[in-house]
Image (cartoon, rainbow, N blue to C red; front, side):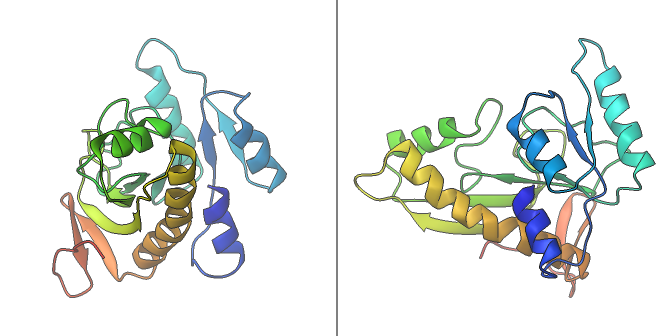
Length: 194
């Protein structure tokens, strides 16, 4: 989130962050976002369905047009209210190493255990299935023979810091759009990885 905020502040992304939603006050990102001047709303998770409803209300009240799941580890209820209006960044080259429970170091450990020679990140449209929606773009990086989860995570994070602002810029400028769960270029063709 802070990387995207910095790109917006530098004038690289024609967008604004209206609100940041978190589920715990003690998450380090909450204080960091507030220190950066961003409005943060904390919505504690409840065992019923009211959590999603409260998140929806906050997003609507803030006038959000696009929801960016930057480090959001819970399932986000998309349909129908937010259909074609939610993007996520995942620290692997989807469809590999995605799905429920695959986040952070778990992903990088899986890449290393699989013996992959390449990793990276994927920015994708979000649907109701974890890490499933149409791909907007991917950024790739090599996996080195002596990589640890930490060293691979650092390299993938550097790719993420380029990928998310690039994807949001393309959406904000109308060069791509999400329609009926598909990612389309300004010429109407479906996007491919880059």
